[in-house]
Length: 245
Image (cartoon, rainbow, N blue to C red; front, side, top):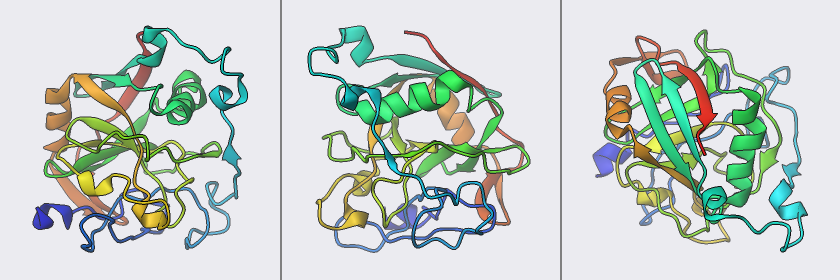
């Protein structure tokens, strides 16, 4: 397990920097994914589009009255289809447990076609696959506001779950990048509220169809390429992410 966890490098990269971190589970030192969000404690160049300081966003769910925010069962578990060059993946989102994160993912990115043309920029069948921030030429896409971290929602980073990336030193730093867990990475779960690195990584959905496609993506031959330690040699491109309910 430790050997597998040691392969989790800093996955969410700026154009010139890997942001490293220690893990939060079991008292052991781990490397965990970090977000290309350009906040504090990064060495991202000042002219990087993601260097801009952004406030934590207040999403529509949080701005509504309790009565106005009541949702139907289908609205609590919306689904999207992630269409890739290797096949389709259906993801069920959990807007009951992660309302801020799901609203950000759908309204902030999916509905704006942000993910079209982005790639899976890290693949590892023993740990996770990561996507949501870079085009085929490895250009980082400009992102929207940071969101509040909901890692304390009781959901666990087990195989097949979808979780947000963030900067280890700043829990409320997730933007567009996400990963799909290929193993039970429970050390990424919420541990406590006091240590930013131990606050955890927010699970906001799970793969309900197409896990075989995820396995195929994870097994894609990869190589180190500059700041990308496990970049697929043949790009795995997200052609679209679309709502299906």
